[in-house]
Structures are given as structure tokens and as C-alpha cells.
Image 1: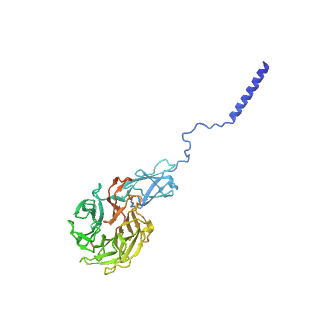
Image 2: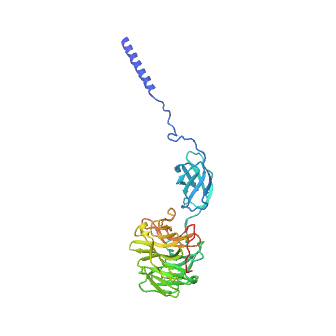
Image 3: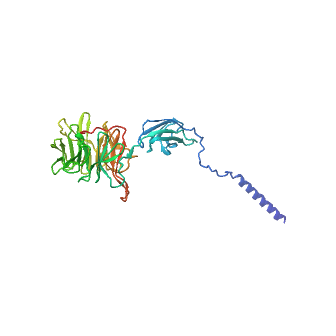
Length: 414
């Protein structure tokens, strides 16, 4: 019995010792925290905004500088809100944030800033941001009233040749009225105002037509050229000459007495514009040969004769083959704009030939069918109808009004 008791006590002592040793080898980690993994950095100072520049901004385009205090030098930590829409800065210092204005617009856009590790938002500043692009033509609602080409007058009205409906006048306030009813043509491919307010029209034929000043039924024909002529593009120069081109081996110069001469030019002309550069008047054309497109220009001398064509801008070299230029226009300072059938349809070309997409974050990905400058700083283009991947109609073909922040070059002949 004693021997059994000694054995029991020995085993108990050993077990107790092992248990105590096990306790000394454990670490008390405490209860799990609800905030486990959350940074424990000190709370930062509240950011504040003192000013925003420049004073004029276009939605989706203008680079803004927000000046203030207590921003983070890490742009990812600065959360900038425009009417509740968050934007990230492209660069930052504790006192300045640089960013592109989002596609949010209005006379009083609320702007404030939050910074990570700061408990409160900054003060709010209300800032005017102008709408960069908007649908302009009020009649476009479906697939019936479809603008196909445009022209503008000296009062800033836009005239749209619509598929199967005629020509409509649209005021700068977007009020539309019928200007000339449809005749035998489906639509005009090009229109230009000439002397006395007469509108000159082409539709891919050998003949050119006119619409009387003030509108009304078109005249039968103004001039008939050789049967091989296919005239799609028209433009007046400062001398009052009307230039006509298309799928021909020549460019036509037509005077008001209806006499004409031809100048050899073998490419298909898909767009045309006269612009005075450095005191010299040039005829600019979009020239398509096979799958390649260039912008060619030819000087017009004092007698109205065309000089040798030179390449002003190699469009296909910059953007690839198989794309078409459907319109050319110029700002007064010489910047050129091209309407194309590319997904990003509008292209700018600076005088140094640097180029890029115009307003890529604003303009919808659909081909542009033409360009015309209206009054002031507004450039208009025709956006082609947008369908979904299966061909179902989504967005109508329309005229879109763009704010370019500078005026266009003059049109001649009016």
C-alpha cells in the first residue's frame, strides 16, 4: 500500500511540474481586436482649399490646380470630390493638387477634399465648370430625322441637310425650322453660302445646285460640269471662287459667271477647307489614295490658280491606314481639326504638327461625319448613329456642339 502511495505522489508531482512549465511557455495574446490591421497613424490635420485655377474650366479637359493646406504629397491619399464624384490628383504637394476636371459641369460645382488619416473633409468651394460637348440638334430623336452635312452663316446659325427631310436652320439657341424642303436629292453631301446669301449644294453628281437666299425650294441647277465629274465637296476662297472636288482626277474652280477651269489632282477628295496661313491663301484637302490619307495643301495665287500640292499632314502615318477624314476646319490661330471615322473621331493638329484626340474623355466613340465652326468658340460635328454590338439602335445621329475656348477661322464667299 505504501509503495503504491509513493508512486502516485511521484507521478502527481511530475505532472504538476510539467503543467507549470507549460504555463510559463505560453504568451497571453489577448482577445482579437475589431480594428486589427487598421493603421494606427496619428490623425492628420484637416485639409483646406483656398483657391482653384484657372478661372475657366471645361469638363473632362481642363487641368486644374487646387491650392490649400494639409494635403498629402502622395496623390493616392488625396480624395477630391466634384459634386460627390471622386477624382484622383495626377500630382500633389502639401499645398497643391493637380488634376484634370472630370466630366461634371454646372455653374456651382461643389468641390472638397479628404485626406487619408484626416477625420474631416475640407471646406467646400463652388466652382463653375462649362459643358464641353452637348447634343445640339433638337429634332434628332430617332432614325428618321438624320443630319448628314452642315454649313453655318455669318449669324452663327447652323444648317443641316437631313436624310429625306430637307435642309433645316438651327439657331444658336437650338431652335429648328425647315429652310429648304427636300427635292429629288436624298441629302446634300456639301453646302456653302456664297454671294448674296445663296446656298450652293453638291450631292455627288456632275451638277451643282443653289438654294435662294432666305431659303425655299432649290433651283434646278446652277452649273453642269462634264459627265465624269462627281462633286462631293465645296469651298469658297477670298476671291469668290467656288472650289469643287470629289472622286475625280481634277479639282474644279468655278466663277460666278459659271465658267470653270480644272487643276490636276488624282486622289479622292473627302474634305476641303480654305485657310490663309502667313499671308498665303491655301486650299487644304483630305486626299485618299487606296487606303492612305494625307492632308494636302495648294497655294491659291492672286489670279485664282492652284500651285503645287504639298503634304501638310500625313494622317495615315500618324493614325494608320484605312481611316477616312470626313471634315477639315481651322481655329483662327491655325490649329487644324479633323473629323474622322476612327473610334476617337476628332483629331487636332497643331501648327508644329503635334497631334492627338480632341476631348477623348468626353466625346463618344462614334465616327464624325463632318465639321463646321459656328459663332464664337463653338465647333460642331455630326456624330454617327450608335448601335449596340448586335446592331440595335441606341443613340441617334446628331449634331454635337463643342466648346473649343477660341474662335474659328473665317469662311469666305458669304
